Amino acid sequence: MVESQEEQIKKESEFSAKNYKPLPVVLSKGKGVWLWDTDGNKYLDMMSAYSAVSHGHAHPELVKVLHQQSELLGITSRAFYTNTLGPFLEKLTSMSGLEVALPMNTGAEAVETAIKAARRWAYKTKKVEANKAEIIVVEGNFHGRTTTIISFSSDNESREDFGPYTPGFVTIKYNNIDSLKDAITKNTAALLVEPIQGEAGIIIPDSEWLPEVRKICTENNVLLILDEIQSGLGRTGKMFAFEHSSIKPDGLILGKALGGGLLPVSCFLSTSEVMQWFVPGSHGSTFGGYPLAAAIGKRSLEVIEEEKLVENSNQQGSYFLAELKKIESPILKQIRGKGLWIGVEIDTKIINGRNICKHLLKKGILSKETHASIIRFAPPLIIEKKEIDWAVHTFKETLKEIEENQIHQ
Ligand SMILES: *Cc1c(COP(=O)(O)O)cnc(C)c1O
Image (tube, rainbow, N blue to C red; front, side, top):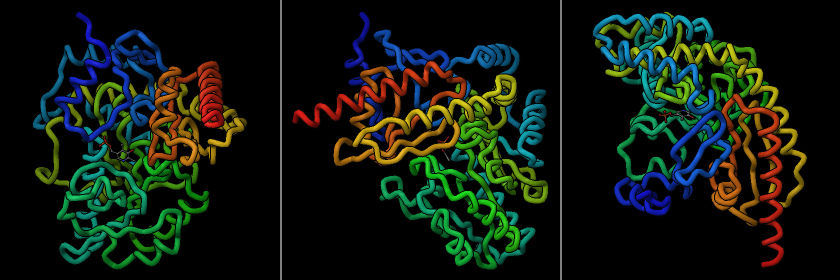
């Protein structure tokens, strides 16, 4: 007997820790920009698994590589060389302009790797006194969920009762140069920052901010490490978000879309000067850079280029943003975005984000609120104009129905 969605939700809820509160839909299939639930209802994916599905679901080229490589060689550990890792990292370094890469699996692991790299560099190259290295982070950051990373989160929900916290982090204001200047000391190893803050609500800093940050980091011998796990690989309409500012970081963290929507693949990239201090035994991961991940990672990067996903993100993103801005509704407060990464801020006095998402779900659009007041529209980068038109139309209709209901209440 086929279980109803309700029954399946009940089962997942019963046996799963409650660290998530999913929307009430049970998905079982995905293809391109579309997802299906177990009853066969179809939804447009506006979440893309927090940008992990930039290529679209079940991309045929990537599925092919997954099959082929899994029949050849899945995992060996880094105790041996493999024929897939070199080509993957060669591609990644040449695309990013950074010299050396260290592959990991999840985003948080790559952030941890960046923190370790910055600290080692501080002691070995910059000659910071032992155990005194400081890493500057910014308010509203999201870099993952490990104990060290949540130690410098400003979000109480993710920190509370997980102490004692890892020391060595200093928090400054986002988009604020004086705050950065004031925080730098002789012990500062790095500034770790998202060029556009994703989980904070798609917060885009002033265009002068990142170039100025770059200048100050260079003047003070501080590494500029960008977390582009979500903003990277085309999401903002450039391959990397830092290209909007024509700067170059000293360290770059990638993840999410690097796995082509199929596997967790992440990476920390930096200069030879920084990376030289990772010597054998100093850091590692059983799965980091394993043959299957490396094959998928390389093909994911190629597909982004071959299918011009960066250009599509830029073009369709501008169109999508402009169309959304045309909507007149008292529910909408601000609409902002870059590329196919759009945040719609709503008036929570009328309705909260989760309830809008529930309404959108009923109409066939999957999205997720962040901080109760922001709805995110971040479809796979393969989305076409007609799908955007349908999404805008459906969103408009949903808002109208909510408004009318409000008036009748
Ligand atoms: C998602 C995300 C992470 C964490 O990645 P995980 O794979 O969930 O560990 C880190 N930084 C940013 C900017 C992210 O969006």
